[in-house]
Image 1 (cartoon, rainbow, N blue to C red):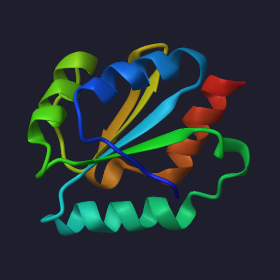
Image 2: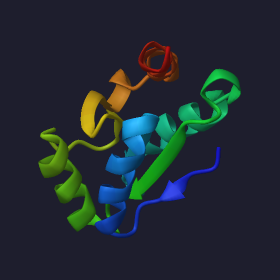
Image 3: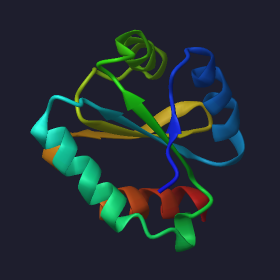
Image 4: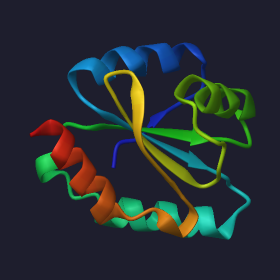
Length: 116
C-alpha cells in the first residue's frame, strides 16, 4: 500500500478536490493502540489493488497530528474515533467506521459501489 501521509491541514482541501473525480480513503491511526495496529495490519495485508488500485489511501498519525484529526472530524461531520476509516466522495464522508467495525471487504465493496 502506498499511503499518502496527512501532515498538513491544507491536504484536507486537496483531498476534497480529488474526491470530486475519485473517492479517497482516510485511515486515522493511533500508534499507541493495539486495536489500531491490528486494523492497520489487516488493511495493508488485504489491500490488493486491482479494482481499487487507483484509489488514494491517506494515512493520519493522529497522535502526531491531532489538530488535523480534529479538522477531519469537523470538516466531514464525523465523530473522532481511533482507529477510523473514512471514504470521501464528492467532498463528503460517505462511509466511516471505527475499531473492529473496519473491514477491508466492506471498504472495498463501498468503493466499488461508488465508482461503478
